[in-house]
Length: 250
Ligand SMILES: Nc1ncnc2c1ncn2[C@@H]1O[C@H](COP(=O)(O)OP(=O)(O)OP(=O)(O)O)[C@@H](O)[C@H]1O
Ligand SMILES: [Mg+2]
Image 1 (spheres, rainbow, N blue to C red):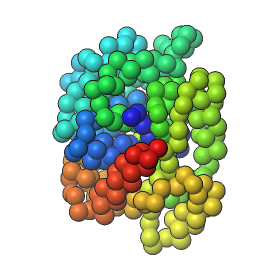
Image 2 (tube, rainbow, N blue to C red):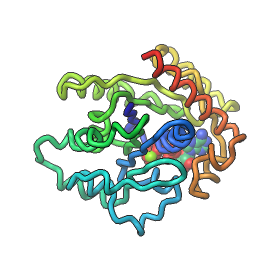
Image 3 (spheres, rainbow, N blue to C red):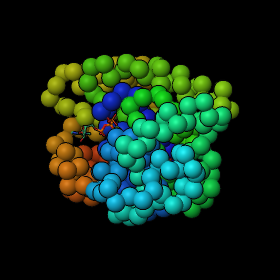
């Protein structure tokens, strides 16, 4: 089961969601996390020192051999990323079949895993396309702030294009509301808006805005490992259960 966490809108909770879901699923399953964002935030989230890395997703995208980029950290396998990846975008320009690089690489190792989660950058460029093409499902975090809906139509169109033009069977796993603030009207309004427009896709679990997330990221650990009883942790635990339930019936 390969799941991309995607939304070209920046800072909507993609990396936080990938890190926490990955950590939780790894309690019972074999999990691989793939960081395909030049920002390398998922890599940082697990407290991985980028300077010490021999191979990263950059090498995978240019030379294949994904196995050699996999490292183990806190119960999950991770393909890390650094800013080097930004250079790969230009190097891949014009390369035939560049949309399928990650797909082909993951095919070699996917048997070893129950779940592979891919954290994508805030754009609809070559890396996000690689992630979508390699995936069975896409999970879209939506920040409970104004303008959150902007770009969702475009993202859904890209999913359709991947299916029609690149002959894939990518399915929408759902949209998850993140950074929900119970005290602001805007959070509630955005939630209602998403519910109105995408009622079938909106997941039941809502992730609250919670400062413990910032603390845990600085400590180099997903919040569910850092403080299991924090409000955000409880919500991510509920989200992992909801997703497992959905995937069982799909
Ligand atoms: N539920 C939350 N409560 C409070 N802060 C949060 C929450 N979720 C994420 N954050 C913080 O918001 C910021 C953006 O989150 P995150 O990095 O997960 O988003 P992203 O979509 O991956 O961003 P980018 O598009 O840059 O990759 C981070 O500083 C993160 O610590
Ligand atoms: Mg991110």
